[in-house]
Length: 241
Image: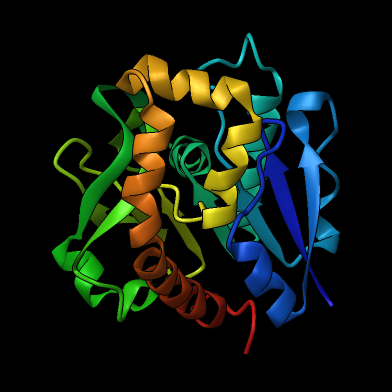
């Protein structure tokens, strides 16, 4: 069985709908709670790196010293080893900064359901083959990639954020949007008062209930699009044959 190194930045966070596909494909997820003091292990024993989102910002290395270690691990994994990498939200931003790009606060954050569109590069890239050219996605971020690293390709954009997806060759893929969020993920926020409070602070009273009503009918299409990304990625990156 192949092993996926999951770098986790917040309690209760997980790869969401990807976990079902890991099980189907014989990939064992091994989470590392780096925010809780767990050290990043030797990379030698892993086949795949999946980096989750988080409330941290990429430039907060003094406050969160583990971010420097994480960037070094990502750089070794993606550039030195050229092994399969998938990052979401903070994992997308860390990929950019680890390889020499720049992340800063966005002029306008995105929390809720927003539309993204594939760039011309994205429409022709193997990693997004068959993915809709425009689609609604789940977002939860205030920072964004301002400058992409050398050799990166921008595969998707939104009206507020020009870099919604990045690719490094065919072995590394990242999304600013939360393609991992599933119906179970969103339903689970009901038992996490801090998540509900954050939504209400950002989007007003009853924000959670409104988001639930908006996103649930869209989840099947989100799942299909993300599944296509995963199927493309796992073969193009060499993770599975």
